[in-house]
Length: 607
Image (tube, rainbow, N blue to C red; front, side, top):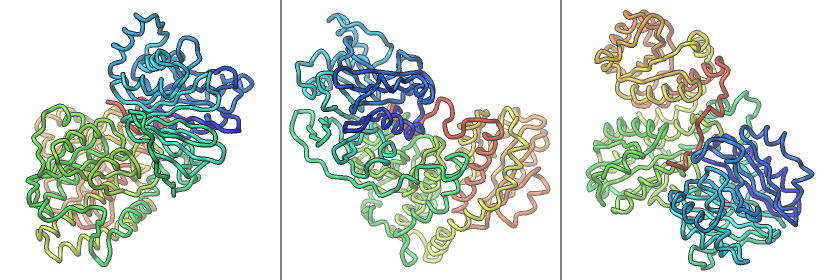
């Protein structure tokens, strides 16, 4: 979850490191630090807390130099503290490293290194790597890193500098993202492209177990055995402004307002002449017929997109679908074989549990489709097929436009599968396509009329618990709405299938308890209305979300939020937008740090 930045060139490194770390704040962190080589030795400054704390503490006169590494840490081993912050060094301070990931065998390494006389000063797993590199160092920094990594079990993205090497830095990765930015007489490393996009659009994407020697005037990459690797240049096409707030108070509200455009971009070139054209998804009719079932694997918001995907694929293509939480799937000895089709959903394409689950599936020969937003991510490189969401950079920790574009990808895949299998009528296919094409303008209509959502937030932001309920697809979206609220407002929230209320949950409803009720599915509308009456009878304050025209709900609910009329099956793409806005306005009313909620990170690259 950490952020890494490194620079070597002819400019002062410190300002570049700080600027890069600021662009990685969205990943979530609890401390930060930098190490700069001044030509003679390595000077370090680090601090618990926000980057502003580090900026106030750092002495620019002491950290002069044109080679440096920086880091933002999200604690895994050892509490957030100055001493546990990165960079970490060997005992002499002559080797400094920054690390993203987890060293699974660090205790074994630590015990061995302590017996060899090494003294540890932090509680981190990373410090063991610094000492291990020192143990193998005999003048060749790359070889020392290579030998050290051969002893390490776990995940890592590493940036390494050494006193004896003022003209280079070393980078390496396994299961944690790391890119190399290429400049003119200067080069960079970063755990994510936005950190260096201000300086270069040309990058190398390091693969697992690759090690790079980075100088001012060039980059050499080797594999774990020391063999040279020829890297393909990757050109970044999106601009710096895409990662800025653009006048909005927070990234999250900006990204909600970008959803109409994101939806258009996702369907662009994929809906042509009234047909879904997934040229990037070469799944045949024969493979679908042999599949037996489809397995969707994801975490968090992406998992909720998978739940909607299950409903849609089963309804349209009539293929059984299992939806699995990646962290559970990988430990349960799953029933999967080479005929199964697996859909992996990950916004970042670097989610550790999802990656591990995907690799399990590939081992048995299952066909893997990745749905991700990040070109060049690990998931996209290792999957058999990739469907990119094209949502654009998403900076806020709480995912919004990534979710709605994931949904759109699920609809397009469902239509593609149903059409190939001949399980959808021409009329229904046409109606859904026409409905999909209207989604961007309908999403914009919701955003243009959001005042009622703000009022609902103002009336309920002091609640201690808020419940969500729905049936069918509404229940699937209710889970995402509830997650969004608890992520950024810290209000306890749970989502329930509306019919389950009477099986225990209704005992929690008391006078004034807010309940957000979703009622967009025509065939389930009356039953949901009955559930609203049940909670109202116990004193609930009901905020209903339904389609325009279903005005009878006003007799039962305290507040009603309407979404534009749309084909029932497509309602999730629209109904989630008011839920995102509601969560946002509740969090703002409470004074929460909306873009950087406590204890959370954007890219979960550890278990």
